[in-house]
Length: 296
Image (cartoon, rainbow, N blue to C red; front, side, top):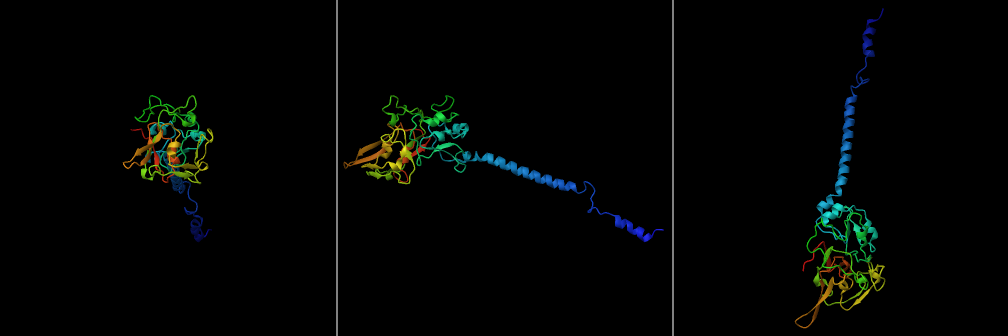
């Protein structure tokens, strides 16, 4: 005969609480929901990151306020930004390494080519404007398609004559439009305006820029620091300009009979930037206004 007390205890001893052995599905559903929620959040964050990185290439273009000096033959800014594939071919062929590609922090369009004339100008050492030949998309072109607009003052009045080729049968440069216009921005600082000469290295011993000096080597640009000057009157912006009749030194006679000099930019200026690069004054007395049309 069984003991009633032991029978009463059996249910208590054999009972299993839900926390010890939960029925299938009773506690896993909330865990799944939490895991799914975490996966969703991770996916959303990753998607946002991908979209954010994709937008970084556009944000600098949208926020750009200043103008960049573009390589020769560049289309108008909007057309350039939409057609350039940032391949860097123009950078590879430039004999003086004047062309650079913009980075994300500069605010002008990631990977778009530009020229910092003060650091290194385009001196047309390649003769044929190799950056245009290398461009696979027509973002740099000798002549624009008729469907693309050209602002007044951008076309050159006549084909520019390259000083280095002046004695050749065909001395002109295959370039139809300017990329900017030089401007004497600080006339009071200009050595010519002051009536002063210049002696020594134009940009100092630490300057790494190069320039083609035809008297030294027609085909091989050399360091500016390796070519010191000795001028009674500073005229480096005029003498080193690679384009004929693009800039001259204007002379005027004052009322007291004294002579005064001033660099004068002419219509044949293509905006190459050599004058800005070679100016021995710091900051430079002459600058290039990028994409600026000519106005008399």
